[in-house]
Length: 214
Image 1 (cartoon, helix red, strand yellow):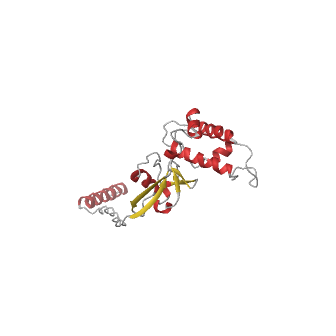
Image 2: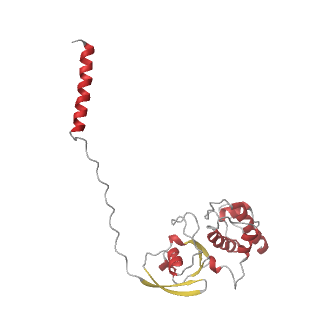
Image 3: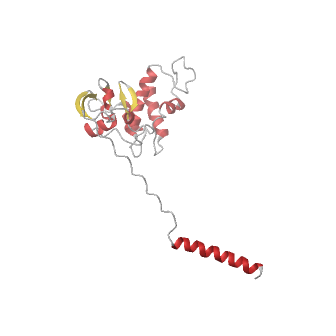
């Protein structure tokens, strides 16, 4: 038997052994995926009093309910939107004592005694707020999903500037801002995302109201 015949037999033997192992079921079984751990029991509901848009509400809520879910599911205030549900998009922005917060990251029980304002509370006696009117005038929205959060954030923005608070792009943090620049508005609105890309019109709407109030 020459070398070529030996090599052929060696290859043939290897293939025959491999096929035999497969046929005999010697392939290791795939491990089953682990089952998820069962969810813990719900905590009992507790009384929570919330002041929203000037009205008092007495609720019974599980302590882990977010402010966003309390507003939407318990009070029916559907203007506050649930976007990312992790504090990244700003669609759930509301005002708490005049400060803007992401309601998806805050528990409802944390806000007893606070004055909460949602987009439904920005209008006064049926008349749109200046910012709401400016958003319409400047076409500062498309699908409108982010608009409630944008409006609440812009409302707080105006109050912050009137109070003399600087931003990361303010040229001199020791002095109040003297001019409403696009960079200043964009920086202060950077926590609110618009997937439709209406940013130039949003900036224009905010600037128009700011200039009238300055």
